[in-house]
Image (cartoon, rainbow, N blue to C red; front, side):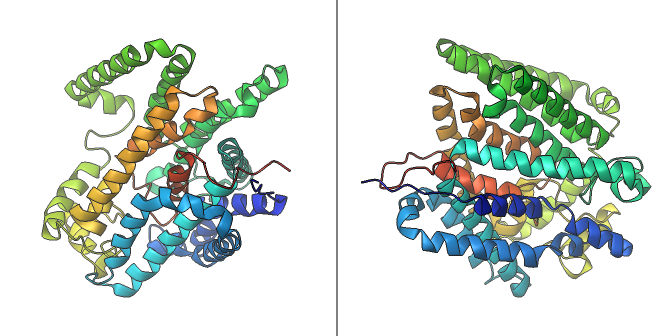
Length: 420
């Protein structure tokens, strides 16, 4: 006889709170307001760690209590477990063993949260929880920017750009892009009811508005690409016979667009209001390459590179003249932290998920079922210019971890939970 999990409303609230904390909302901004001299430091990013740790502890207890029901899903997590084992092992060669140990533990906690999420909630319920968490954060951001613009709107170099309840405009832009994707794919907004359609238009417009108000050029470009990708997926779902030709056409279109953009770099970036060196990112990446070669196979240890003037990052700061606290490229950060070995393990896991997501899309009946593929493309695009996945605010890592269970088949004792 199959077992059925019944999820209480308190668990849903716990997940939403966990999402808000791991977005990097509220607490880091409050920390910066109280300590304006530490803007751009890692201390703001670390400020919610204690509360996030409590959420991880509670979810870990739930997982242990339901271990018999969850255990069949553990086998799907092996690529992520191997990668995290390597991350934890980097404590051995890390120049700051204490920091690497704490950050590794936090990443393991985020993985457990993602495992709990996917093992407890169905895919459409997960999308619903993400929707509510982001909606709360974005509505709070609008209120803050209108009523207390001194806190919600950035000053200095990014003057006039909205950051809302986050510490930086790019974070608001990224979350707003994700919200537009969630609203587009959400099952409840796909109904024929007129109220559902009106609400979708309003929420979609709010996400677009906040994307532009954040002033994040990366968010605008990413959103354009991702919405075009979803349109393609809609056609694929409706007319599966066009599956191969459409993917081939999309590839040709993407390569053609990339070629055109490369040939007109200055024009493209001028239109986006940015310099052709990606606002200082290219000099940053160039300065990182020699350091990556120094620790090519093992890396510097998880979290041990970006330690201000106390770590190897000091050489980068002196070379480029400004003080980044990450590589502004998620893949370079993985190389810095875990070397080629860790990067290879991560790439294997990502590609495994990507292939499964494509296969699932081929048999999708509802739009929300393409969420895993859309999310993986979202990560790929964003990690080219930001450190989204392996970062202090682990929301994106949590959702990534959940994909290993989401994209697997359930064939043992436990069904997905019923709604209450």
